[in-house]
Length: 193
Image (cartoon, rainbow, N blue to C red; front, side, top):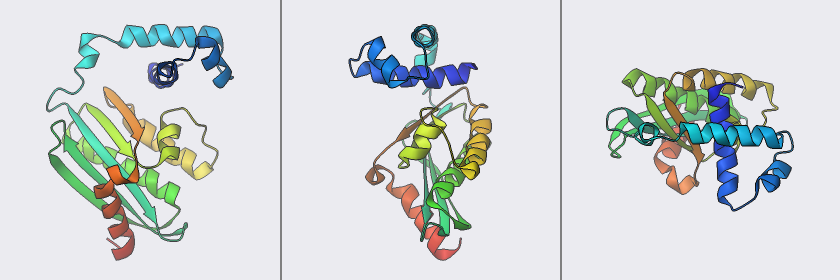
């Protein structure tokens, strides 16, 4: 198992343990992971926690990326939107792109890839991603399996980019917390940008 995959799995375990479940409870929830693997992942996570890892948000090295995809018809006219902010919340870039005809899930992944490429161009080493797509957040986070072949290809492309960052995390948020990216995606779908 690669270190990044261990990080994703360890983050999932820690999240579930934060709900005050025992290792046995987590093992039942994650039937595809043995108790030994869980313990190994927790030891790995503990070794990753250090003063250095706590400083991933040092100004200039970390950014926040909000992404959203929109499809009017699913499939239908689609657009991608991405907003990049520095660690202080200052907007650095806002991107929208018309995607032609696509499903909403494809549009979500295309928005992620669009945003990640721009973040890399800006030279950030660490990225926190916020999306209102629970599906994409859990698939990219390694929590849910990807069944759709198109999404597998897009997820692989996104993961290739994510592997180039020193640190990354992806979180699902409410649509109301992702309004700017949502507007950009809808505008791109509507106006053919």
